[in-house]
Amino acid sequence: MKKPLHYINIIAVVIVSILFYNAVSPDKVDVINDNDQTNTHENYKIKALELPKNINLAGERVPLEIPDVKERMDRELLVNTYWQSNGLLLMKRANKYFPIIEPLLKKYGLPDDFKFLALAESGFTDETSTAGAAGMWHFMKKTGREFGLEINNNVDERYHIEKSTKVAAEYLIKSKERFGSWTLAAAAYNAGNYGVAKRLETQQVSNYYDALLPDETERYVFRILALKEIINNPKKYGFLLEEKDLYTLPKTYTVKVDTAISNITSFAKGYGLTYKEFKIYNPWLRENKLNNKSRKLYEIKIPIK
Image (cartoon, rainbow, N blue to C red; front, side):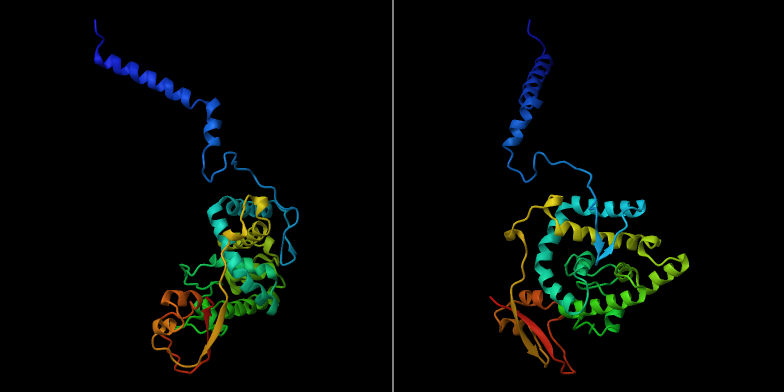
């Protein structure tokens, strides 16, 4: 007698399931992975990290023997190590902009470690924060203007790398003079000089690591420290980059202009550039014109092709 069709289907499903199980049984998984041409290593593991024995910001030691400090440092090191895509992008961009920032920090008397503050602030992207901070150093309009940057709809020097770095150095050095600490100066860059000073006074402390600060500021210095540690020791944290993987900024020459530019697109074409290419090197020019009613002298960068 013939078996009902549904019994035959059930038997077929069982046989296929057995064959599939045998095909991918544990003793054969390694063979499959050996031939897998993906970017994920087969032995990839999530591990706890050993904190560096000595870590500092601008020569100021981080007291890792304090449990709270140790946990906060561990948090930022873990987040920035295992957020691999972001870590890779930051390393690639750092190679592009650090060569510009480093000599400027030295020139203006700011410790080299503060290049990591700029990286933590903006990620070296041309984006404005939700609070309105802009440029590589994320200045608010009011602060930028107080320190002499030109900021309007036509020109915004917060996006001018050299000028904004000079202002950042001035701001941080003044904060250091006020608080007596580079670490507190970095915290004040995030929370403001007044905000940090008020909390230190209220809590009767004088050290960043002893103060209870806003959540963002609590993490801020440790993020800078984590970026410093990881970027200075990429292989230690599993980041493998070759020279060809890194971003670079083409060399430029300067064109000085003390008149208005009625049409920047046309101006750029005169140097063999598109408007987009021109803006990559001169993001501080915010419109397709330069008003310059005061006949101010501006320096415009033109890439060497």
